[in-house]
Image 1 (cartoon, helix red, strand yellow):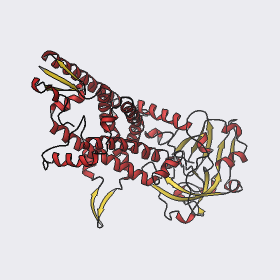
Image 2 (cartoon, one colour):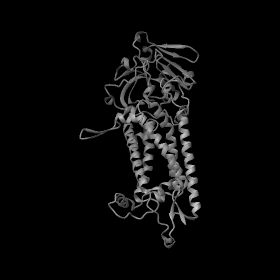
Image 3 (cartoon, one colour):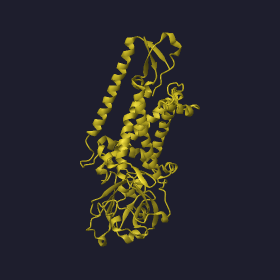
Image 4 (cartoon, rainbow over the protein chains, first blue to last red):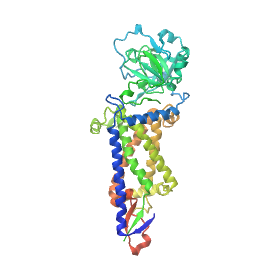
Length: 252
Length: 232
């Protein structure tokens, strides 16, 4: 290693300079930290996150959208590996006053028309079943078995080409208490289902009877139970958990 | 007259000190995330020895109910961790600093003697250049661990788009366990590092800030001037 022979004075000047720079760097780091901490939140609700962090998550969304390919599939399993007791993690939008006999799926088209679609219409379409690892943002996962209609088949059947040319899909529960926004490539992924069966039987009430979304390329927070309305937009639709500080994209 | 002996290049000092707060934020935000599904335990003979983590620990560090915040910090600061680590590795290759850092054929045997010396069981330590054998192993292992954190992290973060990585890591849930164990590894590294730096003393510590150590010159032993004191 290199050596230098210096006068007494010089030997003590250099560390003073180095330590001064070091202190400035520490101060700088603390200022950045406090700036993030005291920044305006992205949402008025408690649990909102600092605006700069939200910006970071949006950049991640841009970057990882670029690596998204609908030919990358979630790993699937034989039905025998599906759990019998499927975890119920949320009941927002699952109000007790729901009248299943009056349910219809409302589909808002870009020309302003609203289609009212019955369960029988949906069941006419080819049924797809899949067992995949359902992943919760909390960190747990469960192999679960679902049956329904591919979203891509559904939009094709109803001639929604103008709608799927837009960037986002919004879904809401009938009571409008729970709502999600999903980017078009993810909802058009071949494993995304409008789902009416779980473990080979009709969906239980607490799993979103009669029709829910199953979207393996997203965390559980996006798998909206009991779909009331579907609409299409170029702007990001409102999203229940994004308003509470979670990543909007929430994709795998 | 005194002399200065150059030890840590400027770039390495920057990488070192940037990494410190960044990894602190990663571990802290990782805890906020882990809390939401804190299922890891150490059991011996069916008896629970350690639960990661006890409620008192969470309370002391103000961890509960901050999952969204934890994820936001984790997925922003991960870029700083990744870029800083990548630049460090590139720098050590291009500057040939890797010669001091990578273990060589003798390192694994010598590291044992270093350990015995540090524990005051053995009187002499093996000869060394900038880093001793134990340091070479530790500072190389930490880079492998950093690489492991990025791979296991990406396996949990994008298990479908990077499904092949998840498969290499042994599946989604296994990758999460590995990611957690690596983090515990950083904490162990950190504790040992702090103790060693404290023992090695001020001259060694300040070299990570100034870049050099200050040594008294001994004109009668000029030819020994190149040998360096043990350091951390």
